[in-house]
Length: 139
Length: 167
Image (cartoon, rainbow over all chains, first blue to last red; front, side, top):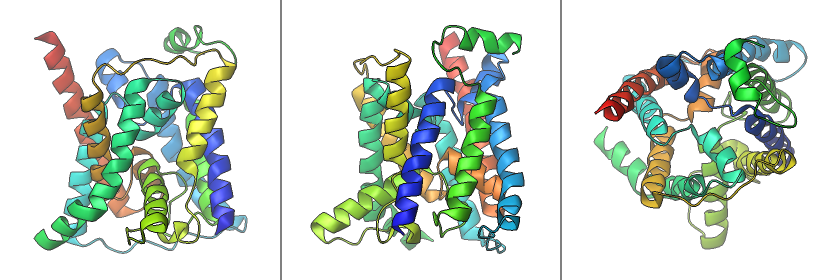
C-alpha cells in the first residue's frame, strides 16, 4: 500500500503543477461560462470526464485493475449524495474555487486559501466525530 | 489558441498550460493511479482532494491519539499523499513562474467555514468536485447523481452571486 502513497504523491505533484499553470478549477468552468461565456476551464472539466471515461476501460485492457462494477444505489445513498453534491457545488462557488483550486492557491501564497485548508481538514475530523454519526442516526 | 484563451494565458510566464490540457493530464493521472498503482479501493479513487485529505488527517490523528476515525481502505497502511503533492507541485510551478506571493486573508473566518462546509458536503457525497467528475467518467450511477447535483449547486450559486453583485 506504500506504492499507493508514493504514486499519489507523484500524481499530486504533477496535477498540482499543471493546475497552477492552467488555473484549473472543477467548479470555475461552469461559473465562468455562465458569467462571461469563457470556456477555458469548462473545456478542462469536459476533457477530464471524457478522458477518464475512455481511460478506465483502456487501463483495464492494458493490464490494470478493472472497475469492480457499481450496483444499483439505495435511496438514502442517493439522497445523501445529492445533498452533498449540491453543497459542494454551492459552497465552492461562494469560496471562489473547488478544493483542488484552493490547494493550488494556498501553494502560491493566497492566505485566504490557507485558512480554507485549515477549515477543510478540521471539517474532516468534525465530519467523522459528529456529522456522520448524526446522519446515520437520522436515516 | 482561441480568442478567449489568450486573455488568460498571455499574462502567464513560463509554461502555459490550457485548461483542456490540464483536464487531460489530470484524468490520465487519476485513472493510472487507480488502475496501476493501488490507489483503491474504493473504485475511481485516483484523485480526490476531500477524501485523500480526510485519509491523511484521520490517519495522523488515529496514529497520534489512538482514535478510530474513518480511513478509506486505500489509506489503511499508509495515507495517500495527493494533497501534499498538489501543494508541492503548485508551489514549484508558482515559484518557477514568479507567481508566488503571500496575500493576507481578508475574511479568514469566512474562508475557514467555507473549507469546513465543503469538506463535510464532500464526504457526504463521497467525493470532492474532482472525484465526482471522475466517478461520472467511471460510470458510477451515484457519482453521476452527485455530479448532477453539484452542477445544479454551481449554477444556482453563480446566479446568486451575480444577483448579489448587481444589488
